[in-house]
Each structure stands twice: as C-alpha cells, then as structure tokens.
Image (tube, rainbow, N blue to C red; front, side, top):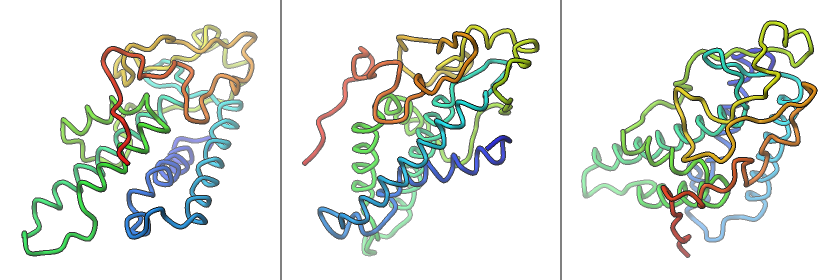
Length: 220
C-alpha cells in the first residue's frame, strides 16, 4: 500500500467487499441470508478498516498538492462505485425484454445499496445520490493523481501544510454536505489513527444532521 497501485488494489477490494451483499445472489434468495456469510463479510470489512488504520499511521496521501485524509479517498470511491452498480443495473433492466426473467431485480439492488449506505456510511449517501443522478458509470478512481509519502519528520520540510493537518474534503471536488470539520489536526506530526473513521461514523459528524439530507427510514 506504499504506492498508488498497491493502495488502489486494496481499496477496490475493500469497496467490493462492502457492497458484496448487493452483488451476491445468496443475499436475495434467502431472508435473512446465511449467518456464516454475513459474519464472513463483516470480518473482511473489519480487516479492510484495520489496514486503512495502519496505512494512515504510516503514510500520507496528497491530492492536487493537498494532504487529504484516507477516508476521503475511500468514501469517494465507495460512493462512485455504488452509483456505477446502480446505473449498470438500471441499464441492464432497460435492455431486457419484458418476457425475460431478470436474475436480480433492479429495485432490490437499489434498496440493498441504499440500506448499506444509510446504516453504515450515511455521510457517503448524498454523494452517491449525486453520482446516480448524473449517470456515473466508472468503477475505477476518477479523481486526480494520487501521491503517497511516508509519514515522517523530513516530509514536513517539503510539505509545510502537513503541520496543520490533513483535509477531510478536497476543495476542488467536495463530497460531503456542509462538513463540520475541514482539517484533521496533527499535533506533533504523529499518527492520526485516533482521528481516522474506521466504523459506522465519520469524524465530521453524522451527515443526517445536515439540512441537505434527511435519511429515509429503512424498509422492513
């Protein structure tokens, strides 16, 4: 993960694991799905979050000359990938004849993706909806070139902005509605593991508090 290709290899796999319940037929055939399958995915997601936490302690991401929190890259990729799944499913539904049986119903795919984001990644949901509205189709990273630097004292001499902390959102391409915090403090230029969101809530606060977004109740 010390290079962009290695980081994105892990990122693509992690995002795919997070959204795997929407792509696995077993989650549609039985309700509830097999407990062992749910546990396996939960464990894989936990390991992905642990890797991100270790990464944040050892490396710094730079986008467009700005040090940026790893959570931004993960959330942006998650929102765009999820939108691409929805757009692909929608196009597949349109191209099928009415007499043909659709393997997985489009409405079911959308509902599962919405549920995953609403429950576990609420701050990503508004950006996901924006991507769906504009018909986002790309499953790969669409952002600017990403640079990775070791988190060490010498880097402060060439990147003074790091002494102020890492941005939670990219000024040129924001993905969060009205973030309460724009920079993660980095006192003493040490690890930021305590600031990196690794579970259901982000350090910016729950986006459901924003006036721009009111989450819907989960369907039962």
